[in-house]
View 1 (tube, rainbow, N blue to C red):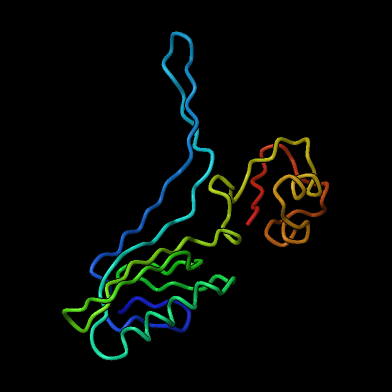
View 2: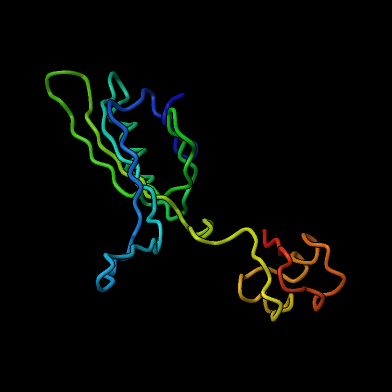
Length: 168
């Protein structure tokens, strides 16, 4: 499989593809007990790399990639030996070699996180017996209809303490 973004497939794979993932963590000291670390959020995945295009038409291919930077919509990035990522094309740099019929390039894509679920968003909760389906739906940003369809509640007010409430 070759690297592909939206409709444009690279004629050959880059020499190097680097995929970076990271998280934001908060560390707080506990007096006399060490510290506690909490994962706050997951950063967007960054995909970057470099390679060369050879032969006639390589400069035209670079011009097409450069023009894709103006596209404000994200698209699917298909990466060899890795799951696809919905991403924005954020950087492209190229240079022509006078000695050989080739163009060296580097690129960067950043994941579009608009549809990504929060890292710590649960699939279910155990009811505390105080909330009803309307309050739970509001707290976890799901619809009451979805809660009722996913669970066997007789009414939105029949959730008892200890019930498993499936959210997604």
